[in-house]
Image (tube, rainbow, N blue to C red; front, top):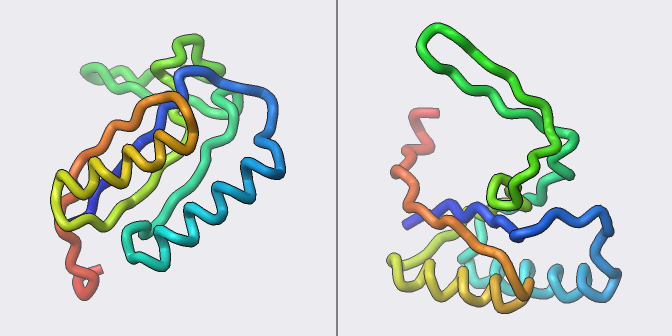
Length: 117
């Protein structure tokens, strides 16, 4: 069963991660890929480079970043392959223990038939 995890760090740093932190993150990522529990992942650039699009009735509003609320900032995403909800929770806890703070919104994904794409 696949799950989408959206990571919100609770703050938005302008400082890049240290080389040591990146090496440790690479090890965690490689372990999860080898275990078959990490399908895809990606980090997001600073919110000042992004925008939001909202539709309300017939009006579309575009808001350029940066976004002031830390709860609005998505730092990255991961697509997880987990046996069930509990396993997805375990994988997410491991990630949050590694990064030290923040929150992940985790939701099951609808099944996708690769042959119909």
